[in-house]
Amino acid sequence: MSLLNKGSVEQSKMRPFVCQIVGYKNSGKTTLVCSLVEKLKKQGFRVAVIKHDAHDFEMDHPGTDSFRHRAAGASAIALVSPRKTAVIREEEIQLDDLVKGFSNYDIILVEGFKQESYPKLIMIRRDEDRELICSLKSVKGVVTWLPAEETLAGVDEEAAGRMAIFGKDDIGHITNWLQQQI
Image (cartoon, rainbow, N blue to C red; front, side, top):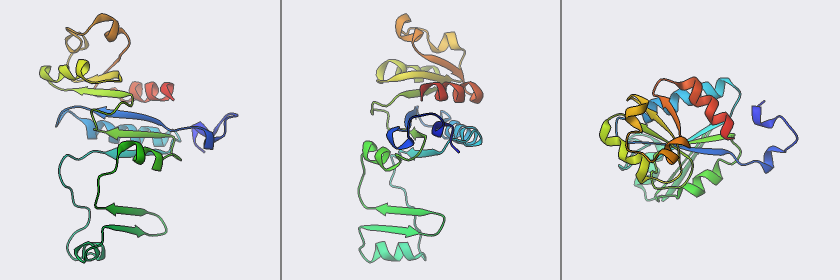
């Protein structure tokens, strides 16, 4: 049973908490997301992940039926088995629509989509990454490879006071923070 299913509010009336994990390439986004998924799942949460890929990824490969279907001209393909479903569509889908599609999960971690307005944790690996703190909206926290005082140098004190600050390996505290946001 999910921790969010406890209590008097029906799950169908609750919306999943959405948190974006954003940062520049090689800042640790995927590592953080995977660590959070593992920890949250162990605690009974149902977690979905949505990842933005700036490149044109391929999920199906030569020799597979889905590849043949797409090569024949199909614009959308669904692969369904008793344990999983995959949908491949030849179109970009807006983040809000993807989030709606995962409405039966407890928490949705979104990797990327910097310009969207969901609550964000920003990954800071290098000094030059710090500009994201002030340039993005809905920043709720920072996960940093740098010392905290260095990470927040030059950030408005009031804004900095509203942000949670975590070290890159502080998975336990980040998980607790996420649970408090729900």
